[in-house]
Image (cartoon, rainbow over all chains, first blue to last red; front, side, top):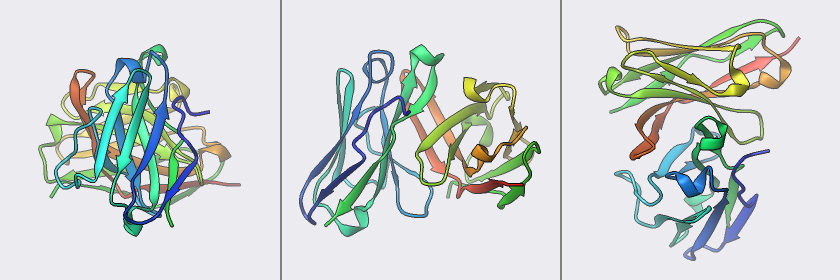
Length: 111
Length: 122
């Protein structure tokens, strides 16, 4: 079982906004920075958000991240069909000897 | 551009070992680390460990301790991950990714290699 909990799937229409949640506990999300990765079908993951809310160069501002307490959220606005992918949150877990942990992933469908 | 290129797919028998390579280019290898992450078929991502590109220090997830060895060759800007005593549930795509930063911020895995499929089957 993944340490971080994500909804298995979310869906929305093109142009709309969707949020993906990532729930943890005090030893992981609450205590550490969170990153988000996008995995398009059949490809390697790509960094979307790091340090809770920072975007690497080349990532459009349609993608946003936030964190509050033991939960983090990825937001995607102006949805496009090309955003259909699996999305993963990731952070450290200090109760697991500072190992890195991922959420189980969320499949985004753009209807 | 920064790129990580991994070795090709492998098919192994149970009990064997496999070594996956990860060749880096486009950046100074010894100023970043490398992480290894695997993904079983239809499943999520699983962090296996980290190795420093500077001094070869490693940190292996408890689940893999005793079975995984991570190494680097700074002369060729390459990282290697050996997994021993393979089982059928080790069948997965194995990824390397460049790692930067620590718990105080500016921390990320980027970019990722293209992945290496390791199939364990008798």
